[in-house]
Amino acid sequence: MAKKNLKASYQKMLEWNQYRAEENSGSLKKLLRLLSELDRESEADETYEKDIDDLESLKFIYETGIRKFESQVDKYKALIAQLP
Image (cartoon, rainbow, N blue to C red):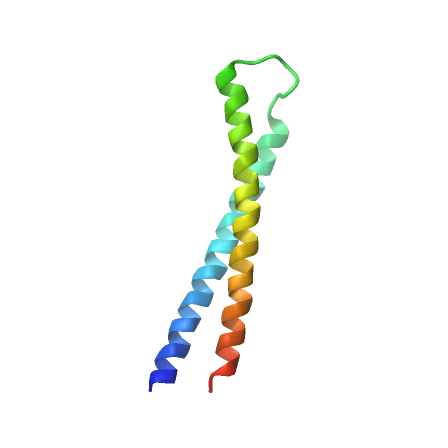
């Protein structure tokens, strides 16, 4: 019974990590599209320049998060496979 509960818990964690990877991937795609459309050549307000820097940082956060979630998906798939 305990292994059945553990397997169900692993499955829930796998699904959560898959969901987060998919959501972050969608957000990253939107962010990349936005970044490609922004004017970076013109001299702009300091706030605008800072916001672009923040968006570039966010891009790396999404990329790192996606890799982490995908790694967790792989780990939980392996853990589930080990249980009867």
